[in-house]
Length: 441
Ligand SMILES: [Fe+2]
Image (cartoon, rainbow, N blue to C red; front, side, top):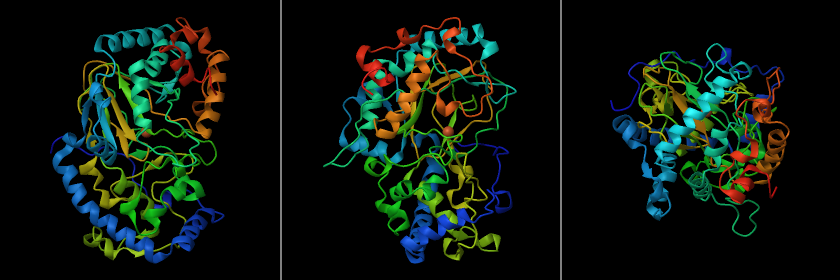
């Protein structure tokens, strides 16, 4: 099959006994609240529709594999037809090629690797034993990748895929430069830490009234009418229960910019290349219990509406939403998590914040697989508030931004690192400075 995993990795399965404990019944209450608002009948109607849609959709993804992920040249993103834009929105993920010249991306890689080597003793990362998602936020390479004129232009275009209230908009597509980590992944070391998951809140999708309202159509029995680009609803959604391991900003699209070439089995990314039906399924799944007989599992009509427990499969308060073949069988995850196409330096990949994705276990290539995480982050009140703290961390010696600071014991300032250039690293003049939060907040 093109682009799918030949061997399914030993990523965790999710069962009720190993789920988030619910001693006070607060999780159960979220389910009860949703049922009291929308009703069992509407939720069941949605469940049957979504599982039905998944039959054909999973068939198509399994057959097409990697080739289902659209690829667009950077120049063509500037003159997108309405049809093409709708196609990209519907799929929810796509590659944009050549956002940065290959030569420049390669030089960025050389620089960031040097920066890392020069300051290695102060830079931790994840996983702890063999860090490769580096706790580094303000290197010259990262500042440049976030603020390169082409990248900013593209971020704006992607933010414009979303829409706010036509009469009373309180947001804008002006991009904000969310400071995230950098990845320098050496070959030959397997990594099991990031199986299929969805970022941007887990339990919040059910627990937070604003977030839940984004998916009102799903719970109302009309999943086909779900609009995943409605910023009016999502702009106030709370992405983290207790400020745990989540990004607290709304990213219209998550993404990264490749600094080195990487293809299948070279430590790259896997996507579940559908967003609307998948997220609807993940949202409905906690309201149903499977039939006893194994052979009935894929028959959605044999599942029972059941809100007797507070178990949300694959959901833990302070982690990203997870999914697995056992707990989410209709997604046929084993066949539908597909490799992204081979990426060259300067190419970018983008995926909607509701999309299931995973990091490849294997890196069998010969060179580092390196990317800078650069998302499309629109200007909203919540995002601006975060950016005020982020810019303070930057100006205050290059500290770890809040979303990445939760579990650190050692605070260190990047401004003391060899090679630090601070604000000089920001490209695109005023536009870059505005995106970085240095002006206009
Ligand atoms: Fe992720």
